[in-house]
Image 1 (tube, rainbow, N blue to C red):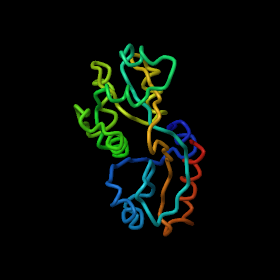
Image 2 (spheres, rainbow, N blue to C red):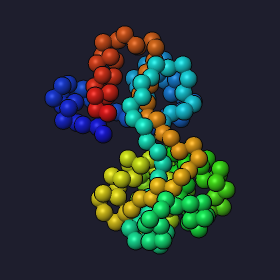
Image 3 (cartoon, helix red, strand yellow):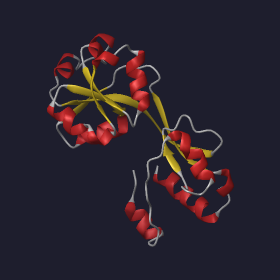
Image 4 (cartoon, rainbow, N blue to C red):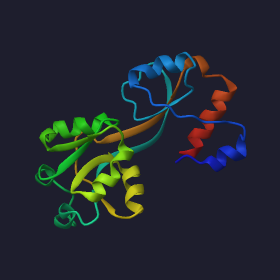
Length: 185
């Protein structure tokens, strides 16, 4: 989604840094000016200004040729199919762990990874499945060696939002960057 060309054209001297923070620290970091923005599926952040950037949903990423895909070419995978899979649990996307828990699939998690982007090589080399946002999964699948499946899942809607502090709502640089980020989405 990020376009360095757009930023280079419109603000060649601006430098963007991304830092991971626990969700419970984001509000205070925004208010203190430690960070300017928070972007993502951030369900626990309260008391910030925000704008929705995109809507998505979770899907399964599997290796190309995975046996489950061969059985389910015509219909979305059902709970019986999901119960037969082994999973990678991703700590940076706790909602996926919650979905697996709701489906009673905790015991099917065979590997946990700290971040989503560490998972594709494991999925490509095994029969493990991972839940991830559809836009990311499609991008990975497009590169080759992967496929996606879209089962019906509980609490599957994802809204990616941009958050900022009310303290900096009228700051010209903050307004400019917000407008740029919204345009990118």
